[in-house]
Length: 123
Image 1: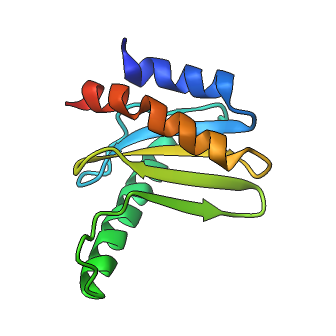
Image 2: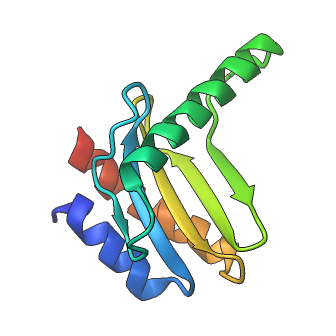
C-alpha cells in the first residue's frame, strides 16, 4: 500500500469533517504526504509550522525537566477546527485537521490505526 497516497483518502472517507492531513519531517519541516481539500490552505507553510511546534514542545518538556520529553500528540482547538499532531517516530509527525464538530475519539483512533502504514512508508 502506498500509505502516503492512500491515507488521505481513507481519512476523508471515514472521518466526518475531514479537512486536511499531512506527514511532516520534524527537523526539516518538509511535507511528505500532504493533502487538503481546501484550495486556500498552504500545506508547505503549515508543515513547516507544525514541525516548529513539535520541536518547541520537545524543548519545553526538556527545559521543565520532564524525564521523557517525547510528545505523543498535540491537540490545537479553534472556534472552527481541531488540529491533531501525532508523533510517528523521532523523525516524523502525522497531522490531521478536522472541523470543530468532528469526533476527536474517532480521529485519534483512525490516526493510531494508520500509524504503522505511515511509519513503514517513511522508513
